[in-house]
Image (cartoon, rainbow, N blue to C red; front, side):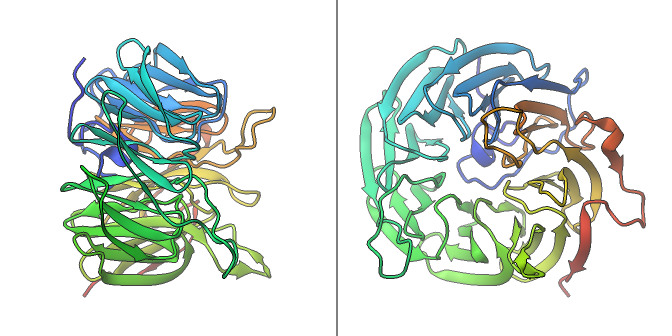
Length: 417
């Protein structure tokens, strides 16, 4: 089995090591029939797709391998703790972080090749580039391991201070590292963006942005884009200097920007209070990559923790769901922000001891098929260009021209002159 490279595959989190969330624009292959697969625990991480196989982790501690076209079960790999990150696939090996280790698993058979201890890696999804695997690790570290399971380097950031002036606390780095031009980028526990030499781990620069280490950066055209509470930063990839910053009334805790051509997209939780209580709405933005000028904004009925994907003129988005608004899979026009399709989604976990309500899995698109994990344990695969196949169909609809989309509360659009 060969692992295809490029945007036809989504072989790791956000499609590739640049974390830009760009997808291919081809329609689904002839004969594809939408399918769903039920894991025994909630799915919080995003799926990876490569070589005709979809790989997805679940809080039941299992990595599942499924036929990408049919959903047919191929194999499972069991760990000791819940998994909520995205696998990375390269050279017929699947890499996941879980139960305190980085695991290397044969993509054909599901058998373990090796595992390396990294401590509590939280939700960091590995990046694979130039023969090394990069992943967030315990005690504020970022580590690089080679394909034989040998540590190449580790880098430790400062800790997290709960209150100003309080002693910094050590914890695992949850940021999923990004790679470009021999450099690894990530958000540290201390809220700084770090750039490290990919081969040695030597610090090239760091820039404080006040971000959450649960977020990650996207790299496009020599610029890093990273969200923080109330801000979207554009940093020079070579120096870390600020190119521009946009301040908005939105918190970006988990979201990774999606970047295509001259536009960067980001989604998060509306941070203004409503009648004295925290807002349950979400916001989606499109900004010019060069100037930072806002192109459009959409406010959704539920906040957003998943990162959007973009390709073929479409933006794919999943809202979290709340007590006042349903979770929705939405397909927007990437140029205007207008809604093309929406599908209501089940944001409740299955009955039991799974505290995983709300959709956090980011849409992954490969070969014209959109894959999305739900907290009820289902992985769905549907036609990406129209969203067809996400159930329940009786709650799915295409938005007629001129009518107010169901997921939208309002649209504020500022087009460039």
